[in-house]
Length: 495
Image: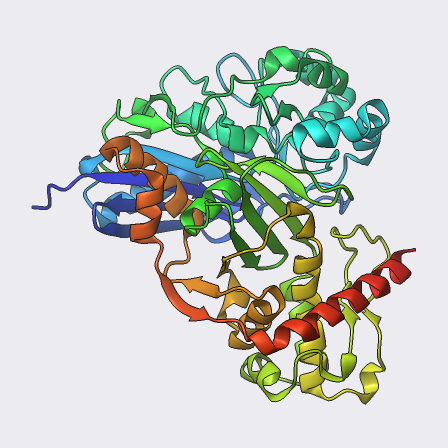
């Protein structure tokens, strides 16, 4: 019988939950729950309950709780969870769950990170605090953030707001359900995604909280370091062989734990998550904010700071150009190898949907060339260069170059895209062996508490690249010129 200890990491994401068992030699087992397939009774096939208003995206907190329980039960069928000595988790970094004194949600649905219905609340915060809000909290008022969501909740349902004892983000609410006593704290990684926390002190800003919603300051959970123990595992979650009473390290947000699980939590390292949206985030030695207000600054779950910029037009833009070019995915991925860097000086701003970075409300790609006169391969290169150069241009405010960039998500499978990213950034690009970086990051924090092994040592041991693309120095002057031309083209298009 294997007597080696385990730590468990949970990833409560938009469309499901994953639970990972981490042993001394690396991950040993993984279990997954898909909300559409496994929990259809909640009516949230894409992670949210359909609404007539496309800006409204809400989900049942009960679904998340049930998903966590089911994922742990399934993990227990794969491995002996009696070996587990510690547990932690990550959840959607943004969202709001209002709960009563017993920790029960006061409403059946809660807004998630995809919700875009708090525009008036964001405008009110910006009008009240201006640039000071971005400078202190790391972000301009953002529709998906917990603070504006709390303002809307207080305005739309004052009775429910009055019943609420706690205004939790999703991570701290799920953490509360897992521990005895049912009132868990929040870590700086999740707290910094709320427009409410001061980055320098890692404390709530009382005047911002009170201006956001009446009584909000008293409803917020306390902030503790990301390595703190939030409580002991409650008997209700002693499932799958888990023992009640084991320590639960405070939950964090998915973005901070992904940075950790990618092994890129040190300054000079960045991650490009190439999924439905393309997210570029990087570790920082000190908090600096985006003067344009597009990027965010969060605390990491490793104790530092990170930038994050979310580009709406990611995988769907790639699929659209692929179909318009008449290519299968193999031909799409190979296309950059048959074309030259900045081929024909073609520039594309692939804003097929309204874009977040920069903020562009009118959908539609902008071409600096005649797309009908370009070959399929040239169209693909223009698209991928447009996406890579957007990441490069809109991360310049971080104030550092990168010695390595980790890539994850579906787009990380494209060798052609990785070549372009390496050449645009002039940095090595690494695709990691594992894909469950969020669950791994949570498990690493739990293992560090259990074993005393520092997170940096864990990352060096566990986060190994499956492939590495070195930049071509000959492409550097080409892309320097292309980036300057692209900046002028973007400014012209959003003027």
